Length: 421
Image (cartoon, rainbow, N blue to C red; front, side, top):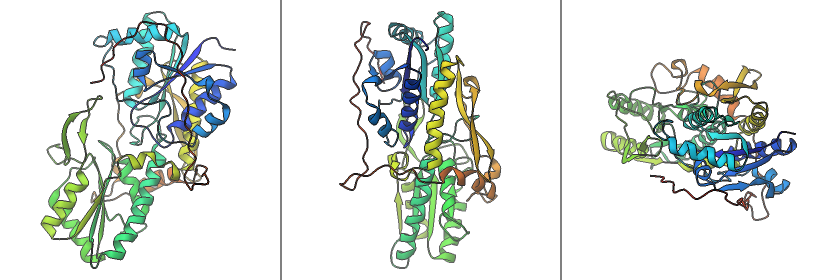
């Protein structure tokens, strides 16, 4: 059997199925008699030498982890800079890995996490330390390059489409004497994948959402207001779905929270739904409501997509396989081989083609008028929300989610202060 330890860590915003990936990693490694440590709160745990011994978790707990949302070992929004700028932190990582005989590092996150794994693989080679680094895909934004889709997206997309369809029935019922325009805000800083998923709720032009706003198209307020009024005149009410990251023609975010930037250097966003609802009310005199699902859209394990769940587990198993085979600086990615019937497989892609890159919606996925999705987008999106992967429910009527004890291994190095701001 392979000699050494595997270190797994979660990064960035968690999803409804990232723990399904974690469970698959642990189960696959156990089958190969490989010890798995998990970093507490992502890369921070690795830097602080706060490492969880997953061997203490019983088989039943790991099995239950697969249907539990959140991040079982904690995540973080911390981006390491270049090797030159952040060399002390990278060298600290090598020290921690060496102290615990870590030979395989799996970082479960987005494109920034892929960048960290890539840089760490290069530093390990410089130090002549035998380390295989694997990026494991995850993001509800669906914006990773190379992979056809990202684990976490399918479930968030299903939640979005279902929520919009259900809310639309409410709006339609109340429109004559109450809300005429409802605005739903979807995650998506630069890419409109989640907003596009809402389009699956509609089968015709008059069904909700009648208006979708994408970051890939410049926001034109006059055109937006005119379209809303046209829909209300024709249908009697209107549902709008907007990506949080829509910008105007000058590139300014329509909703900038004014709270600076996060640890990844991204502008803090929030409130585009409120802004649009207020503009509709003020300009058109229509009663409006809006919703900001925020964490709900990425944590809704109770309505997870079966496709998404299966893909999340598949990339976890393949990540272990690639790691133990020594396929350094790679990521297991999803390759679509057929739309109908929907078929896919997992292949390896180099991290250098994924790190710090962003996949936006193709132009042919957005209607010419800019307010909806095309048939091509529907063909791409629909299989990703297909099927249900319900968690088990307890006698109290609530999902029976797992809670791991997360026993930490003894530290072997002097502690190091790690700033998170």
